[in-house]
Image 1 (tube, rainbow, N blue to C red):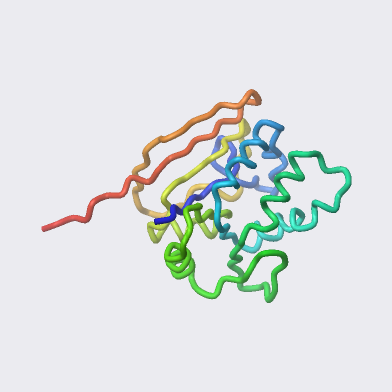
Image 2 (image 1 turned 120 degrees about the vertical axis):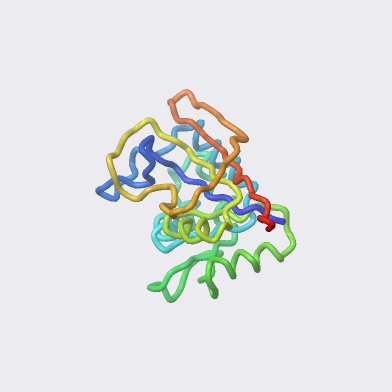
Length: 193
């Protein structure tokens, strides 16, 4: 079964954007950007909310920018054809290789897991991840922890009133002080009476 992963950059105090909505502190250096390129290679489909979709729209036409360097062109070549499912109640159309979600997060993930393929179903965006996590649909949490405290904003981790046990399966420290943490959700066996 295809894994569902939630991966984003996060401040050390746990936010994907600061209180002002900014995330300039998460701009990747060359090593971290190479990491993101390698990560996207394992993704078959990317689920995202409207805000992340609109942020990532740049990459749909970025290959036309003559100032892009080779790694950015490589990212664009991987991102642009990647199927994307956008969850939005305000958008009526989307661009590129994207479609608006026709069902709930659970319905979309169930349908995507039933399709052939070995790649991951990636979730981007905290709001969408909150819903998927509450339903127990996230298999892995992948954080790129930046050495900054932003003091508030949108949290990376869902604030559901439930415990989720995690197993650390990978770490990597970059020269810039950024740390990648990959945790797998420990699935609890069903309780019997």
